[in-house]
Image (cartoon, rainbow, N blue to C red; front, side):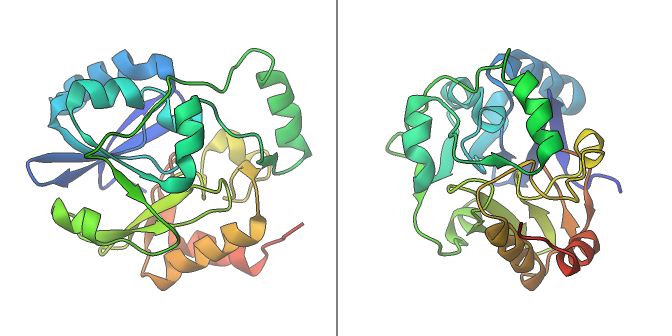
Length: 240
């Protein structure tokens, strides 16, 4: 399935660019050391500069999504959007440790990865103009204000601060609440996150994507795929 939206892939993460008033909305960043790669690809692929980015939404606080956000925000002047549950970890500049590997294969792989990777990034403290989402209420105002038709919804399960973007055209940006990377698929994730806090909440998030008219999933890890894939997985969803 082809990408309908612009995206930049650095490392393992796909950062999506959506047209908005006078520029672009960026969904997620990459690892801390990937900023220069991102800037180069942004220019080479789309002839864009970081100052074209007006709003940055972080779907959750993990280092592969927040990594170079602090530098990007400083140099772009963009407004940040995060959930209030992310604030403590963003301030510390570390990924939380509450999430657990989905299965034994993921646990084995990451036991090796953890030996040479630190789940850290430059601390990020929102400023006065930044937007902090609170509670579990859907938010349409943030996107409406910048000319994007859709809403931001609270979708915990992978992390307690997880948020997703659901557009009126059926495009869903779930962060890590759904994955489709081949290197994870071979480990038996079945579109689920590789790390989870609550599988029941993941299932509920998938159901919300469907209820809100979702058609195409644009994951942060892997290629876009049809919502029908989630429907099929829901029928066989295991919570243990």
